[in-house]
Length: 137
Image (cartoon, rainbow, N blue to C red; front, side, top):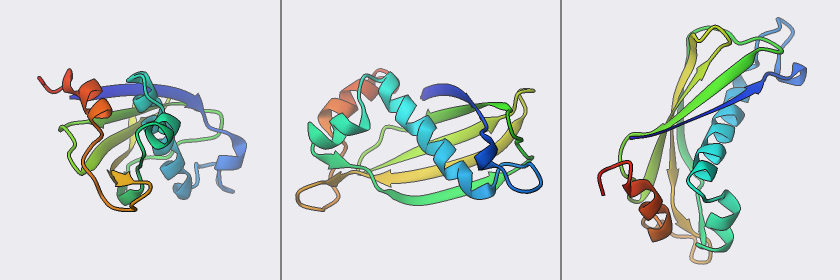
């Protein structure tokens, strides 16, 4: 299993009138987690697109809200890949507040799509090689 954590502070613009993080902003938090997780493997989204010829559109997003997060709170986004991807990749994400309490959980499924052909393809070999170490490959 691959696990990565990243931290950042909630900005004022991300909150609603009640001072809670607006529910729609969590998708962006999960994206930050995914981007930084992939970066920690030595790849970037840009390299995936420009060098490997693959884009990764979101197919589904399932979120469960457990407790609120507030302005200026330092949050941790934990991003996990629990199975070796094939044509899709499932990211499991969790947001923790500054007390270390789980606030939000999500499963995000993305497809690997050939940029030129606009067709679903298998995981790029370079990306697969970087993940295999976490899955006994």
